[in-house]
Length: 148
Image 1 (cartoon, rainbow, N blue to C red):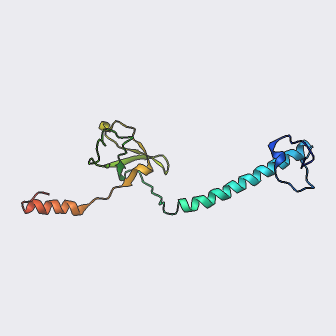
Image 2: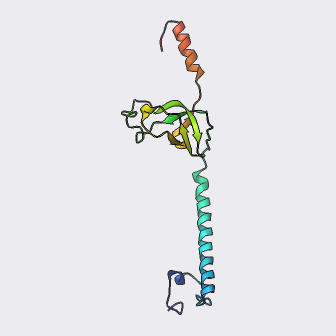
């Protein structure tokens, strides 16, 4: 009653000015629908961009190369035998990166006793940094007759 026609599709119920009516011509109708789809697509992209900026504000991009040494986060879901209680180590390694599939997936040189796939998401990996301080500390304490 408001539009002066019976709605054929839900798109007929979109807000329009009073002088505009849905066209009965098929080509014109298709163009109208395509304009509506393009408008909706642009609004979705705009909303997506405005939500992505705060979400990625503190996120840093980490990229590993083949041959890099990394730690693997031992998630309880993926490594149930290695995480039986809260006192067990939360990371394993260091392991070598064998292959980089993309920025998010890496194949790691994982020993067979882990019993899981050697492909990991970057969220489960962290860079290995050799800690010479602890090695020096152990050597000095062994020289002094103490064991750490």
